[in-house]
Image (tube, rainbow, N blue to C red):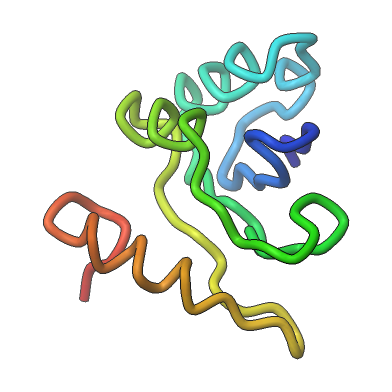
Length: 101
């Protein structure tokens, strides 16, 4: 898990060899370590009220992470929480990698 205050917010990195190097002060260092290990990194429930009360916003930090190859997916639903804005983000970036299949 790579969780920081918004932005960037709550992310997971899976398929890691070692999660210990992700314990970094700077969030970008944690993301770059996950990327270096070939992890699949995704933003968990971007509309989570604990981090974005009354909104689901794409921040400049998310653009940077995506452009740097440090975001491979977005969780668009979690239990009763559904984030249609996140689906639109995936569609807008589908020519790249967030929505394939």
